[in-house]
Image 1 (cartoon, rainbow, N blue to C red):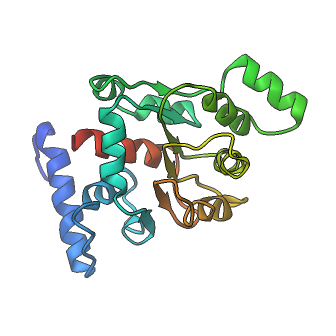
Image 2 (image 1 turned 180 degrees about the vertical axis):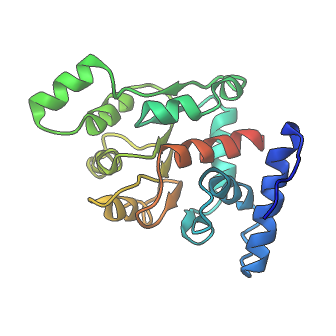
Length: 208
């Protein structure tokens, strides 16, 4: 290995060229309609497993773009994802990003009911009167809360990005949405994270 002198403005382009070449060397050819999302997740994590585990419902990217164009908001389960999503780009379409995890009313209700703040945060988001894209990168209980509301027919998310990372209920929570009618981008397995949730949002925003 050797040091490469690359202008700062060219670093990201070079990274994506490397990713494309390595995928080709592995014999992996991502779907052309979703490849830019998969590659940005790999770019964010340096983990090529996303080329195998990232799962898209039919027409997912086009549906998400259409929601953004119509002014949908994004709700996340961490302030890290909130910070990472390009809010300026989203605002050009009339959307905002929200995270209710640190809200005092959420913390208080979660403690009183003995459930996670993530679950209560999803319930709070459900009271908003507009289309919502949920970008979940940390808490499987957020996905479970959304699914339970769907089952009760009290709320249906417009779109779900389900990429929580971890070991407890993570795989199961993601699998809940694979047979649902809600459009989704899900990473099967244990991997994910707030950075991946933000990367997926940004990939779609940058492609608009």
